[in-house]
Length: 285
Length: 251
Ligand SMILES: Nc1ncnc2c1ncn2[C@@H]1O[C@H](COP(=O)(O)OP(=O)(O)O)[C@@H](O)[C@H]1O
Ligand SMILES: [Mg+2]
Image (cartoon, rainbow over all chains, first blue to last red; front, side, top):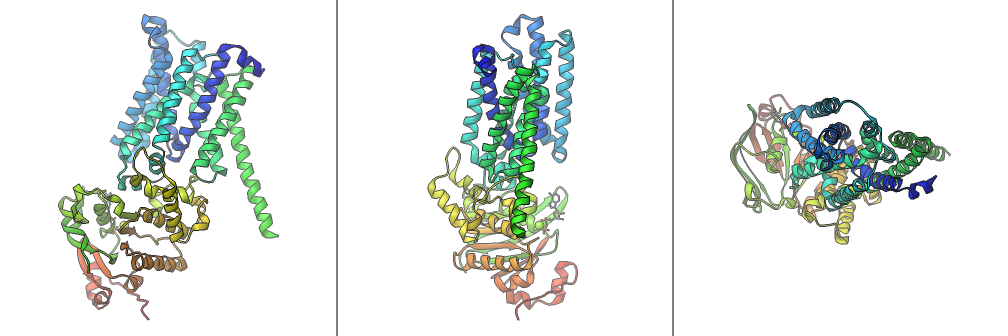
């Protein structure tokens, strides 16, 4: 079964991509969760869907399709969407969360228009919604490798500033950190990671891969770095188990990856409870 | 006393259309321990935000360490502890060591990394506030008083010359408040750090501070504790807007 993943090139591509997004989605997800931006990831994934639908339309109706693939169109829309979200958040200072339904519904609305212009749904779109084990081309894989390198490099270089900004924006500003610019960089990274993950987990579940492993790790981690490491481990476990079982049962991997993440989450909650009960027993004795 | 390290001249500030501070003239001399008191809404936090450059005064000028505000660069000379509850994200795992490291982030600078030396500094600052044994604990698992000590360590780690604290003892129990003042006293006396402390705890301030400043839109009083104690009840209730029961712990 696992051998299949190395026998066929398309499965190999999927597997490598899975390992890459199992790393970068929870890595960025840790910062997203601590900053309470989980819903922004969701909004951006729907904008990405609009881009993908746009790409599919081009592919179907125009010759341009060869140049602007759905993947690149999705990535472009996602990045542009991230810029819009930041604009909206500064326009509606007192109601920043308003940016999310605006962008999310805008994304869905555009998707519907592009999809019907391209004459309706097809299996390709279904794959984009729920993920697919067989959708990653070699050139997709190369793009995702590039995104991974960019994400890891930027987070490595700006780790301490991102960390401070995530926990205490006021303190960051007072000490002279360029909060706005760093935040912007961060949102663009988020857009890139979403675009990279969509092939495998799908539009509807991409934010789950960024947040569920983090939700599990904050129950048991000590310190922020440990939270990141645990989140990545949980993310990788979910991706590996999810991809293999998805392939085996012929289920879109988005579903199996997310269900695995939820099982890990439940496990970490009960481990914490168990630990707590044990230490209480000891204290009583 | 020594040179002034903060000078405010004729500073006024209004939010949209609401006057918060009116023509404030105010200096902080090096080595002093200033207790900033006044009624709620009197503009204490606004004054601090002006000093930290978060707000810009509409009138008047501010100098920090002899440098006009807009040219001032050495922000690491100023440590700041805010009212913790509203500023810091306590629900997410971050160890004491990581939290205190934030105090060095700006000083270390972009594209540079913490070295062994920095880590030793962090450990020293944590030791200074008596929290060494909690170095690797999550800050969210500590008590309110302990958390406040960690925020002081974060402010101290960059070796500030001026430490500004905005109502740091709100929500801290009485016993820990006393320890807290002892710590401030020690920082002021032994380490020579200038302190500006916003507090409602006037009684304790007359005990520890070198200066007391009363602020209610205008600066009503700036003098030493004994001058403050000799103010009549009438003076006090005048700028508090209501009678004040002053409890001093001098006896
Ligand atoms: N962001 C703000 N927008 C509008 N008004 C504000 C703002 N912050 C404070 N104020 C007003 O300015 C005055 C001074 O507030 P503040 O400096 O917080 O007082 P203090 O810290 O002494 O309690 C109050 O009347 C308050 O309502
Ligand atoms: Mg205040």
